Image (cartoon, rainbow, N blue to C red; front, side, top):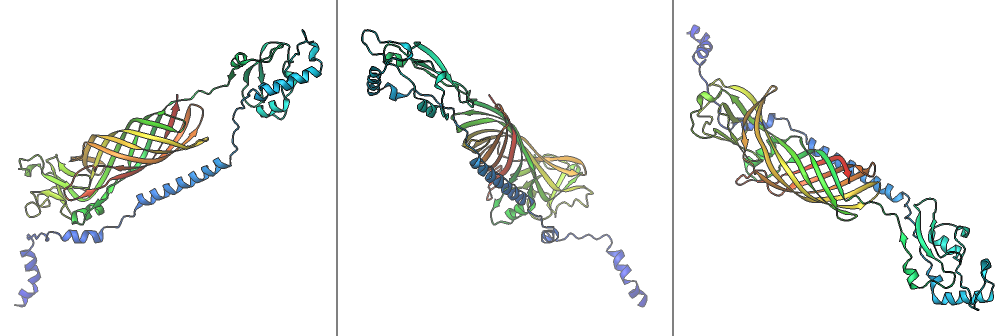
Amino acid sequence: MANGNANIDLLFRNGLKDLEVLPPVGTWGTIYPIIRKKQRPYILLRSAAVIAVLMSISFLVYRWGHEASVIRENPFIAVNENLLKPANRQSAASADKSQPARHGKQAQNNEPVVTYQPDASILAQETGQESVDLTLLPAPGIMSERNFLISDNTHPLLSFQSLVNTSSPPDSKQLEGISYEAAKEKVNKWSLTAMASPTFYLNPVTGSTDISKQMNSLEQSQLSYSGGVGLAYKISKKLSIQSGLYYSSIGQEVNGISSFTGFAPYDNTKGDHNFGVLTANGMIYTSNPDVFLRDRSGDRVLTRFTNDVFDPAKANLSYMSGTLYQNFSYLEMPVILRYKFIDRAFDFNIIGGLSYNLLVNNTVQARMGGAKYDVGTTQLNPFMVSSSLGMGMEYSLSEKFSLNLEPTFRYYLNPFGSMPGIKVHPYSFGIFSGLSFKF
């Protein structure tokens, strides 16, 4: 009896060595949230930091623009209307009767000679100069029609035609011949812009079910990219409209989903897929029959091969990873309105409009080491509509080229995929930068 008691542990060990007992369903779901490290909201912190920096730069540039000196507009030389009024003509005629004619010009047939001498103070006020040298102007009563050029040494020369008649004051027909020619700058109506941006996508799920909570806690957006070419037309000095073609790449990680390979010999179903995975972007359907999926922390995997039917450990399936990677791309055609509220060397614009997105790529992958394995696709909306609002900053390098920086917030009017009982409102934030060419 003593010998039997001494070997009781050996007896139990030999008797139970081939016994395997699976844990109850849902056990891992209560353990995994405890051991899972809480991820820091790096995306939100980075977005807040970027917004703070942009607001600081905008405030400094705005203050600098107000303190900068205002560039004077080109002076415009006008005819002194006071000299052409009838009252002034009479006073000038009476003055000439009492004084001898200037420049050796004598009156004939007892008719007074009316001459017009420009007022230096009036011309100086109209041209923006401190003084005007009247010796540069022709003496009154010598020539009939001449062109005079007056410059203030800082602006382009402005030309006007002065009609001087030695025998009589200028009439209405002669005044119609007075022309004013000002240099006009060529306005570039069109601009071509190439821009690119890193983009942060978020898919907040609203709902009180366990599935919606699992989606919010176990799904994480990857850093995405967007870029393309835009063509803008300037409607007015401050308003312009823009369109173009952009390419957007969007990615997301779905954690807590274990994937295995080697399932093809056990695949005896006649359907087009063996597994479905509920995600915020839409339902994932497997297209690779050699892949086996299992949810370690919930009930997001829909399949006939449940835990009580099939065990991947007993079937010696090879483990790949515990994360699925969703990747899809859209072609965007935006229609954007721009309003310029600060027009300086550093311009500021308000940007807003709609974008029409067409799905061009859709894959779901699992990774093992450096290799990627195709799992299936996500059921997505092939056509998306998004609204955007942002602020554009433009720095002119020359008359033709300028640098652009555009922080943009985008809200999708319809979600990427439709899930019954679950509401998803995706939005994104990106900082577009690029080069613009005006023509």
